[in-house]
Figure 1 (cartoon, each protein chain N blue to C red):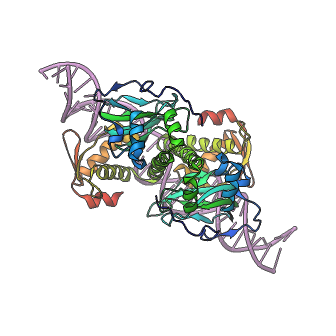
Figure 2 (cartoon, rainbow over the protein chains, first blue to last red; figure 1 turned 180 degrees about the vertical axis):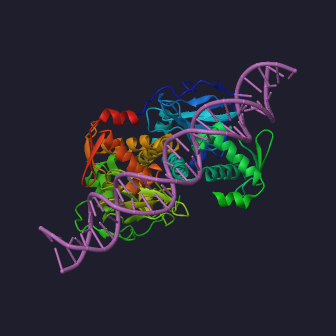
Length: 244
Length: 244
DNA sequence: CGGGCTCTTGACTCAGCTCAAGATTTGTGG
DNA sequence: CCACAAATCTTGAGCTGAGTCAAGAGCCCG
């Protein structure tokens, strides 16, 4: 662990547009990394956060580049993916508001992070985080918590990729979106599917054609309905759930 | 985070055989969780560790059961897996010596951990770990480091399961074993394949027959050789590597 | 309203699965 | 140390779920 005591000002961040509204600080939201901190510590962290906006398709992190920042998604969705040499792609996670991006243990980013739609991200310099956390171990605990959640989700997805059929994969994905868009424990029955067919394919380890056919199948069986703009409605929740 | 201040003695551990050689403490090994601690802290941790032996096939953790312990593999190999209702299995990770088992953030184990061969594990009560780490944040950092490594490996495996062919999967698996059995940066060219065909299948998201055929294929192409007892020799390293 | 994405659908292929039968290895008891 | 039963592994034959290739339809945005 190298602690670089250097320039903690809001420079040196990945290229994108800085939100002109500087009042919007991550610490203002309860979803950020500082949930476990006191309000004083929170203010301190907030002062060193950078608030940024990315539009759909913009890269936030690049695999192999020096890992300078840790982020928290404030709004929007970020896809985390890896590539094989020949271009085959696998989305290894989706980051929703409250989810952490990057890590403080590695020298380089170990995946690509790309905004799926209009996305707001709060960024901290990893060097600053490391210094600050040394005297505020609650922050380490927060980061550990986020990392552990990501690991659990990865494990679930390994089971999906390795052992589920195309139908089960798509059903699981739709349930995930429903739960994510719902309030508390009540899944949403109508929501926007934020990913394109190709992205869903890259998340589920399938091809775009299989996604399309499987969607058609679900529509024919009246399990889901879809309106223009990828607005999806689950019309037979119990059947969908039983496919997961 | 609930800190249960209770009985820290060596009771309440998962059922198995306690090593009669009580002198063998985890902290004696450099591979344990306490690598970042001072020798004094290490002694303290050591006093609360339980050293246990598991024979091949014995369960160490059971998914869904209360998460009472955090472990470190001292010797042997542990398979971490998840199950679907109908019995389909996916090994989500292999834990080699030095690797951590379990977590301190969740109330229940979220996977099965089973000894692949004769395995020695060092166990700490999660309640004790949480109390101790509050005043020794280096321990949180160690756990974060281990968790982050596991996450990175999971991401690599998601790419493998979602996007690689059977040949590429097996080649990747064999390279992983070679690197793991090698010294430093030099992979071993001859090593024991610790998993049975069915376990390799469950790790790579394939069937036992496909594993067998793919092995035969590698042998026919003189890329590997196999002796009794699953002793494998890589005879054409560059070809194997190019398949990864 | 037109051009470029994105999505769907059809026809065909094929990697990997299933089912089945033997072969080989391993573990155990005498 | 051998015998032999059980477990594990290999191989073949045929099948099938998902991939590939190709064409056309829908839809978004300037």
